[in-house]
Length: 353
Image 1 (cartoon, rainbow, N blue to C red):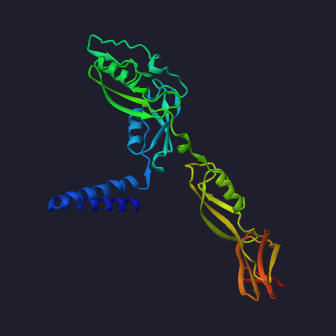
Image 2: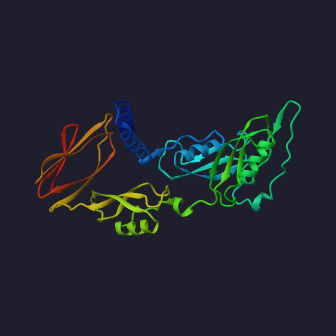
Image 3: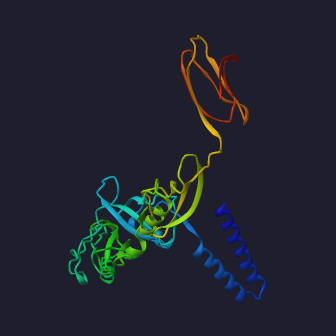
């Protein structure tokens, strides 16, 4: 429903924008409405995560950046079933709704990726060999430009008869801003002369404090005030608090929470709670427990228990059992009265309350 409303609104804005251009007076109005349209998309609530898997790291980073999200390499694996620099997994998974600036963690197949913690000398002095080979067939061996500065990498790519196509950026804890983290195609790949090379370039350390996720604590069983204190300590906030009437329970004890314990959320996220509300027992109510064994029978026996008291006459138990089974039940009564047991519709036993 939200998506439909968004589409209807955007269609309306586009139509008005077009009419303004056609019928004149429209330059200022067009600019104004265009700004509204642009602002609408910038401020729209959440983003449904696309599937970034099964594509190159550079392509995935480009998509993530265009959506206003952050990218992080969570782990590097060596999996022969996937190409080098290929996205294997993502966290959160596809389809999850996230806010802008949310950090998407990627699991990458190794190869030409500079792992977290790898060092690089200033100025790119630790760069690999810059030699380029051209085969007799005219194909070119892609140079290794990892750990080079962007300008140096671009110069080497172009001098090798290739062209720089796309440059995407990613935060990296150890590689300085402006240095190449990964490339596609990988180093030493044989490609046709004039082919395009894409680069993933470090933009330095990310703002960890702003984007680090918080693990939701387990609040179930805690009193509401204690749960609030724990949420504040975890940099989270209390959302909706719903009271649920429960017999025999104290007031203000957390029964359920959403998001669930252990989930990772953004700092400041609201945690919604359900807490107990003690239900006062009606004056004069008494608990009645019955326990009896049925007589032997080859066919099922219908057991019916009827209570008559100040609350009126009512059936408190009605179920079929096999012969010689034990029947147990608990109910409540008020004031004086009587309980009667019927088997297959016939009187069997009674007791005055």
